[in-house]
Image 1 (spheres, protein in one colour):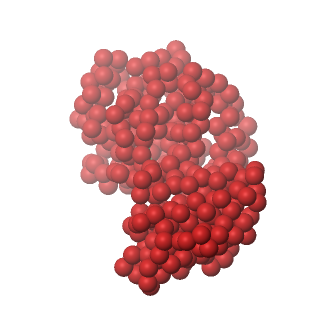
Image 2 (cartoon, rainbow, N blue to C red; image 1 turned 90 degrees about the vertical axis):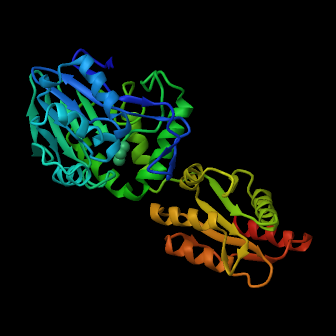
Image 3 (cartoon, rainbow, N blue to C red; image 1 turned 60 degrees about the vertical axis):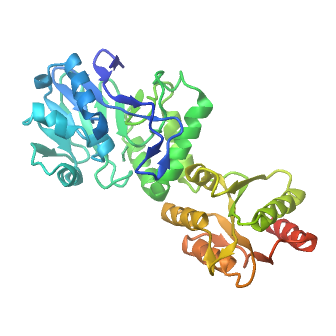
Length: 391
Ligand code: FEO
């Protein structure tokens, strides 16, 4: 526990060991935290809980801070089990305490816990007087689940934003002005790229809606990672930038290779690009050897991606198939793409990748390039030319 103000305390869990999130779908190189907040005004309010494996520890720690029976209201901004997961353990102690959440939140909590607790459905604009401060609920549907919402605390002007504006980043420093800024923004961008990209339209709409309310925001308290207390609107501005078809002057080459033929093609294409454009950043990733979520963050930053695979069994290599599936699901917009790959006899990989890129709504700029067996100097020169032409 630590105090954020005289009224609000953090009562969450820092998960230093977490290396994978959402099953194995999201790598967390710097761990994470599940931020739960306790407000002690005339009424006592608990906002969100922590991930299920820490439920006993969480409730035991909470008991050191407060007699659980003093909690008047529980607010679940989002019922995914990294936030709602400790409810079962908590509700054993205080089964009648009202749980405030959206209509979808009620369904989601019931779907996970199969309990009919004392739910209170809230909508955007609903308020809860807790004494000197007032809580105002703001639904944030599809940011990133149908049940997501935020809770604004007027008086102290704190926004409990849940997943939005958060990041998987374990730090005992806990505030944005204290942590390493490069690490902070790398994790915040990775979080946005890998989780929020498909919902960018909703991000823009929601931020515009909140800004139009003209409410002061002195602190943003997300449910993962650090708390934004120094110029908290900086992350809101970043989200607006990221949500509007973000791209940098970068071309990312993602490939997998069996006997280095496709790798040599990738390097020759990169050489061709750089020979024509010194300014553009070109990054190469062997998809089978590099972290898939880090690659996705690089795709997010790119204006163009090139995807390459050897042909195997009339198809593509599995690491490429996997990342193409991720890319499709994330619904990137306004990005160009092309395919390449080496082959021995049938040579379908380039066509297959091209089709995947088209179905992921990338602007595929040509039919790609394929080279037989291990590319010789002439073949590599064709790859360099391919790179130059892309520029
Ligand atoms: Fe942090 Fe969507 O849960």
